[in-house]
Length: 113
Length: 114
Image (tube, rainbow over all chains, first blue to last red; front, side):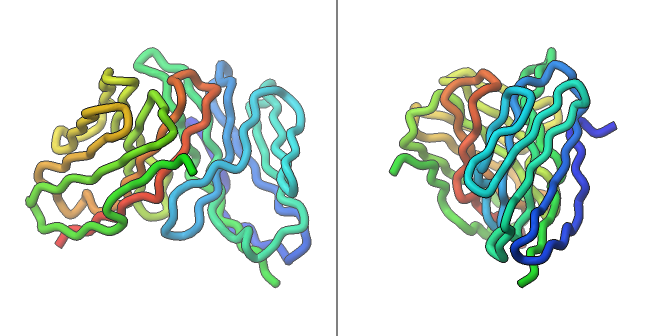
């Protein structure tokens, strides 16, 4: 089992619709979760951090965390063509060898006008 | 604006010719990270510095070295680049090492090997 798993996509959504991205992780002890957006050929850009169970909203983005199910999701409301990118889920792992941020492989989102 | 700056944005080197990538930050963060990212893959952590304390990932090849002469600067040295080292190299910083702190990335350096 991968430490952080995401559906690679592409997730195709019409402009104005809601894009729903999912991420599961294997370490029950993880406490910190992040979503990054990465445009093709660019570096990752932090868009959301979430630490507690429940929802966290920031503009058109909502992150949802369920630690019991080891599941974190990202909703993008009113999707725009500029939201077309790869979205990376990242989980802070506590390991004996050293703690580190572990990334999923990313979900590619395509928003069609 | 406080930021993480990587130079150069694009680097072309010859097979086996040493190359150095640089990263500077004005965030005054304690931790600096180097990641390697290949096409359609997740960023892979190579090593990080917590202040002057260097931490190497177990699977980072010996070919990769790093230096942090002061808080603001960090360098990635690739001693003998092979074709498999062609990738985007990302520098990131965080205020402290604890998990609650997000990492902030520079724009990356895309390395090509001839």
